[in-house]
Length: 430
Image 1 (cartoon, one colour):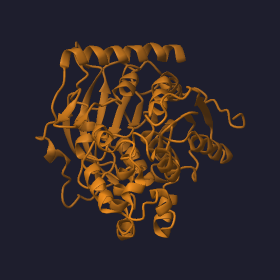
Image 2: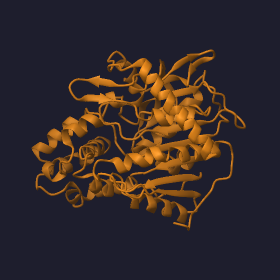
Image 3: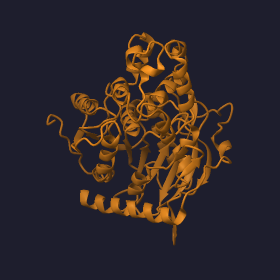
Image 4: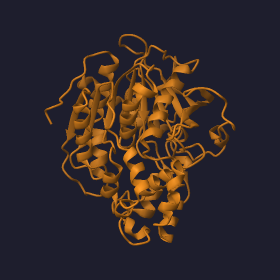
């Protein structure tokens, strides 16, 4: 199975490179802004109801006899629920593959939860899948790196739905790494995809969850929450890669690294989702910190890195203490951070959890602990450490390399679950 996945991985890379050479780059288009504005008020309905659709031509595409290769996209605006369970609207993209599904039963569907993109609306996956590079001078640019995973699945005949998450694309701050908001957005993207009239998936389609880094946390949170939030979905497995299951541990890890500015995404997201803690946090932030938070709220990762790499959060606090020290004495904030922890619920489906032992962004220990927690709760877990040696710690290389290196195994794992094959488990062996 892994050998077959590696072949399709190579095909995915080839498709990406060839299409890139043909299509070149494209600038961010502002004409689609109205698509992302939800109806006000939201119409009555249920989570997953489709509010709006539009064609989505993927940048990485080629015409074939039966349509578009590797798939035809549809942009979605759908109902979901925010971190507190209030109705909201989330955008995303469904991609129907041109490759036939050669497994048993109906064509399967994978909800792909993306890794960190940024906090500006221009960073939303649905805005970036249509262009190889979106660029606004001088430093705002983004390329959709998740196309590698998306194509690897499409080339197996697996349909893919990609959520933009709460507030990424749509109005409001993106509630970055918020456990409940991300789980809702992922599960409701599946509901929305299954309701599309021209989709080749059906209510009987087996469904997988797939994500790495921020996406790994979202996939893991969705797997945990599915039994109570979306019990009707035919979920069969989840891939959870390098999940930020413990936000405080992740904050400490990235403070002073290439991704220091991403801490600003978290603070902005918490303040947006939980207004009751805004004043408490603001009282601890310096003027320089407020400028940083305002800046990253409208940036994608490359611009945030260019502006705030290797800075220390102590430079942004009123007392000069690191942010994790400051947050530790704010009871309301601590309570909310504890609510974001992944591992307090039990996935009802088998899970593959991968994590690099030298990860310089999301600490390896929390991935292993999450696997242990789920095993202790009786879940079926396959835990695979990636032992890539440390390369320039602090430059996120040891976070990115395991994502790429683990792709063949992760795709093979999800495909096997979609085919109904028994799931492996190594609980008790790590």
